[in-house]
Image (cartoon, rainbow, N blue to C red):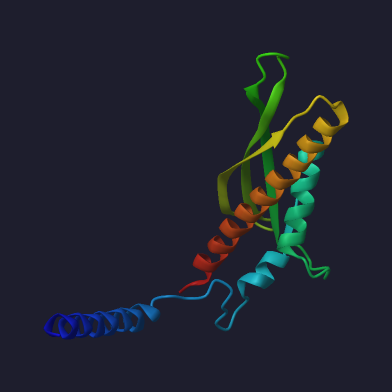
Length: 177
């Protein structure tokens, strides 16, 4: 009985401690897309123009970035320019010892990006994002091509989300007083 009361009191104290920390730290957080008087981050993201990217992976990455930055379909005058340079590497992970063919492969992509103001050329954000996607291979040639293409699409979506998050964070930190 005494042990039960001690555990109960300890649980109540711990609950109050957690609630207290939550209240104290709650004032330190600011939502990413919150605006205070000026332009909010969502409006700034709509003003980003994505420069054309080469190759098939570049096509998927570019269209995904356009969708994530301005998925509304509104035509907004561009204020920022986003240049992305993807570097793709394909590797065979598992090779069948009987046939000598790869059973699985992976696509590794490193993308360097730079966001600049169109008017002044000021660098707003830059960085490097990395993503990888494995896929299974078979003895069918066209199935392998489709699997590799699907893997490229997955990598492009992942890279676009990472780039968008970094740009949004950059806009949010620049807007603070």
